[in-house]
Length: 113
Image 1 (cartoon, rainbow, N blue to C red):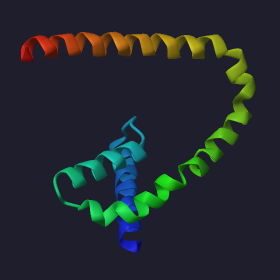
Image 2 (image 1 turned 120 degrees about the vertical axis):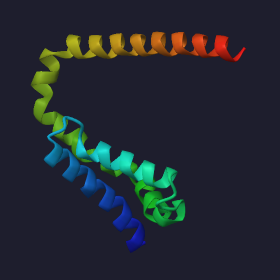
Image 3 (image 1 turned 90 degrees about the vertical axis):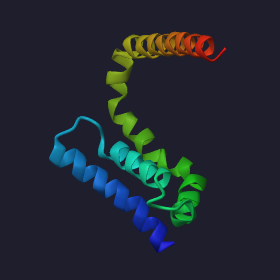
């Protein structure tokens, strides 16, 4: 399990380092996740190398959402004052994604059919 934990947190650390020194606007955790995915895809790491700790993280994922949820309480007044903008942007972005996916699927279906 230590090996599994080391690989997962090593990718997270490497992502944070890349983000910090590269002055990137992408969060280091996302970069780390992409590095881990690439390492698994290109067989640099095997699934069995990370599976044990990843299973534990997955089973306890609900607990990992508690701190961000509690932190939202600090910004409740901002959220309330900007609720219309937040909901509007969520609805608009969802509609845009649906349109783009539908358009892409139509184009792909025509090329494959």
